[in-house]
Length: 386
Image (tube, rainbow, N blue to C red):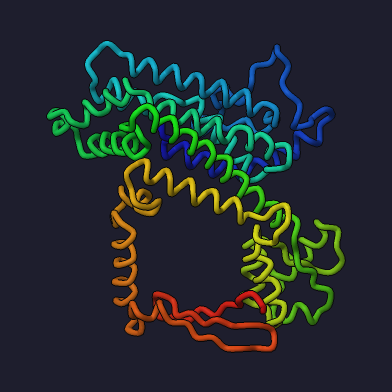
């Protein structure tokens, strides 16, 4: 069920080709990416990948309208595969359960790989509508597998079997991962709690999608225009060229700094204009916090409430405790201790008490807060102007 290293490397390579492939399709007559395939044509997203390197994703044949039926078909196929594993009459073994699960869902792996690449590079309004519809469905699908009692009983039997010691280290690790992930995802809950957990997961999936799309809207729609050479003071030619290209794309005069990290970070690094650095920095950190249609404050509140409820349902005091339980640190408290221990080894000025101190000073534009970081360096930030 997990992608192999080869498949991951392939996707990284193929992602670089997606824009050119899509551009090639759009340049052809009737090459709209929103057209659905005819009934006579199979959905190319469901097909095996062909070509070198174990097969190449069919980016040139992607149509936005094909994602929903492909995802739904692949999920149904995966659920049937899982049912077959769960209802196997043979006693559970590493091969007929754990390995079988690893091999299941290959069609869904292919579809979600393309779906993920498209979401990272071509997430226009029509694709975003698909994301909003499919996010809760994908969450519900995952819960159907986790909450399959017959399947979990087989995994649990292998996990508790004395024969587990006969497996090699990698195999034992895989058994541990499957068992732990199922338990952490609610496999041991009662029926009512499982139902509520699935509702929470579906709500969270929708909220995460909404949050991301709100941020993307403000990254795409907001920018700072630079109108004179004086506005470019300190910027190397590469940053100037990028700002000019961004202005051309937005059909603006001069140069502009887009509201994205790749545009903001170089400007904050090199610009000699402190006033413009503040302006650009404020634009960037205020994404989703402008009180408009893309404001994320209520969305964040809902996410925090649902995460807290889910953590309690799963037996953890907070979401952070749940998130770190299967990690090296195990608890949020231990994670903080590890960070402080590491920073004190690297910097003699770092002390736990330093994280509680802040120096404030006034300027003619607002309040400047200087916060000592956990590694002894001072981080100066602009707070909101009074």
